Image 1 (tube, rainbow, N blue to C red):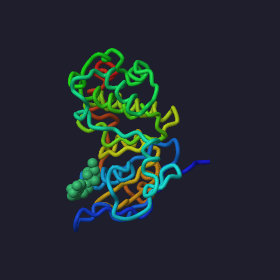
Image 2: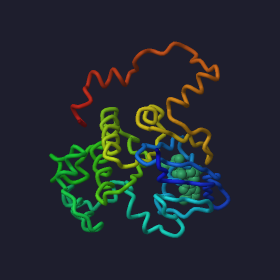
Image 3: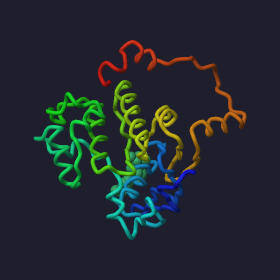
Image 4: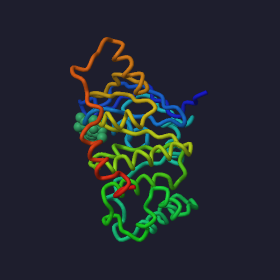
Length: 253
Ligand code: ADP
Ligand code: MG
């Protein structure tokens, strides 16, 4: 039986006169990868940051693992992992030192090399963040979300701006984190990413959820409604050609 780990009811966020989130409701099940899929400005980050306790809501109810956002925000902080922008890390420290710093802040014992190995950055342990590629930076910032051994991690557009190899490498990392039992909530505007990665997605547009289901179900429903693609699609696309020719394990693997 699936257990609900996040419950959002009638969530509203106003910025002045502008309503960015218009009374949305959804539930995330324990152990799933749940996606908020929508274009820029849809309200994805706002929604995520409210659940993360980092942004005040206008109205609505949010429960995270049985904890009330209004009454127990500090308890929620202890069981979630939030991805920060890598630009915010102390520039003078290397990856190993940054992880040790976080361990101290969270008062957790974590083996930094094990963590770096998990995100495939063991050979970069002595490197500074600014010396990493875009994909490596993202993998490192995902690693830092795991230091407090959270029940749930939040990833806000973790693959935006990455090349195809780096994206696929990050997808595999997210899947491996879920395999270990951590619930993942991720935002994206990439359809292929949501289709590959997410067990369920909420499609969000202008502050409203317009559909919510597994990617397969959403596609099946569309087809059942009589939808047909205007023309026969090719069996591969240019990205597949690129990956095949350059090898996705070479640079980011
Ligand atoms: P997304 O992450 O889906 O791109 P956001 O949640 O960042 O969307 O933004 C949703 C809407 O709210 C956008 O129209 C954005 O311009 C607006 N918005 C976001 N943050 C603020 C803010 N601090 N003040 C005013 N408007 C904001
Ligand atoms: Mg955003």
